[in-house]
Structures are given as structure tokens and as C-alpha cells.
Image (cartoon, rainbow, N blue to C red; front, side, top):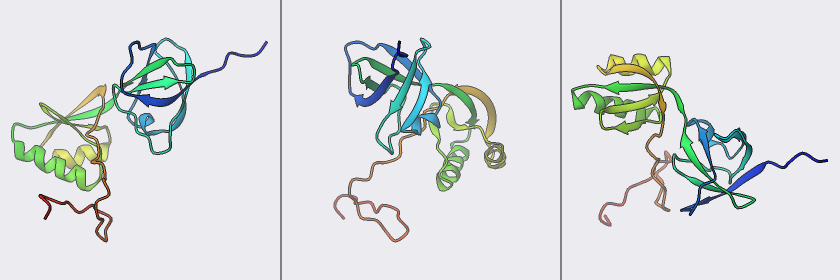
Amino acid sequence: MSAPSLLTLTDRIGHAARVHGVLALPWERRGRARLRALLASGEAVTLAMPQGSRLRHGDLLRGDDGRVVRIVAAPEPTYALRSSDPAVLARCALLLGRRRIAAEVCPWGLRIRAAPALRSLVAALGASVHEELAPFEPEAEPAHHGGALRRNGAAELDIDGA
């Protein structure tokens, strides 16, 4: 008797009439194209997405047997950055962006993945930093739509056709 085959999730879909399972993954694992994980039900699944795929909270994936699984952002160690001064949060966002650190913009401030070196940097800018175990869904990086690249690899913006 052979072991039952794993559900293999291969296709991202826009909508589904029925969702058969939930797969909670932290941010780092949602950037992997290939992995094994457990659904909330305990069923083992394999993820086999195209290289470079980044799963987002709420994405729907269709398995090789037609079942649909919803991706959710799993709670993970994060820092909540808060300040009553919007300029402090803007400076924090600039610092994080220059360092290519993923950040989630929230109504109350910014959320980043926990890292002691970052805690010191943003605290030095005046932000209050609170450790939280929370789902992390950072802002999506802008898509490159065939725009010209400067020598340093940054996309040039075409504003109003100029």
C-alpha cells in the first residue's frame, strides 16, 4: 500500500466559490517558491510556485487535485514603530527604504520584522518601538512595467509623459 500523495499547490487564482484549507506562513516563507508546510487542518502540502513568486495574505492557490487553499500571514516577531510626530515616522520609513527593509504601513505607524540592530536605529530617530507577535504584510514593491533603468539599476519614473 502506498502513502497518500501530498496536495501540491501550483496556481494562484483570483477567486474561488469554496476554500478548502488555510495555510499560515510568516513573511520569509511566503517568498519561497518551493516548500512543504501544514495546513491549519494538519494536512501536509507542497508549494510548487514559479521562481520569484511572493505570496501575499489572502492569496488563493489551487492544488493539483482542484482544491483551493487561502494563504494567511502567520504571526511572527515584529516591532511596532509609533510616534505622535509624523516626521519621525517619515524618517524611519526613509531609513528602512534606503536599507531595503520591508515595512508595513499601519494607521498607527509602521511594522517591521524584529531585528535588534533595526530597533536601535529607529529608536535613535525618535520612534517608540514595541515588540509584538503579529501577522506581517509589508507594502508590495512597485512592479516594473518595462520602464528604463538608470545605471544604478533604479527605475526612472515617467511622470505625465515627461
